[in-house]
Length: 138
Ligand code: NI
Image 1: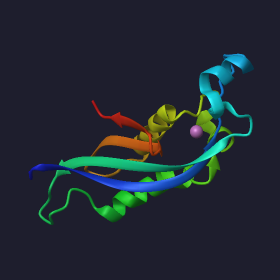
Image 2: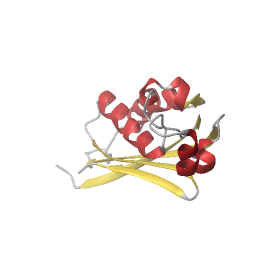
Image 3: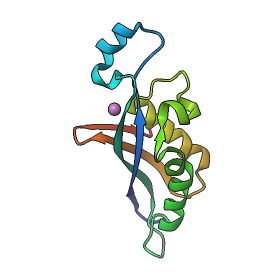
């Protein structure tokens, strides 16, 4: 087996969300989530970095890039791009559409669809230039 190397591919998707939990009063939601609780939501241009880890093969590759792109696009991007996360994504029914929860959902989507020999080790989502959320395999 070759030496393990991590490979990260970057994807982008646009989506809208509103942060609001039925567990709290409208006033408490406004206090907790601030402007992210605005009634009609708002959008982000999310940046998704997906990292795999595996041995470098005889072709000098850790992962077939076309296969990597295909699984991320079909399992994640096609489900989230240009969607209202609160309304269009069933997994957010009763779940607050924070980017913490979005990172876990992307991990779940990828894990369920994963067919690649390389191991999925990190999902990193930047919501804005100042906010990044990471799930890493333990
Ligand atoms: Ni937001």
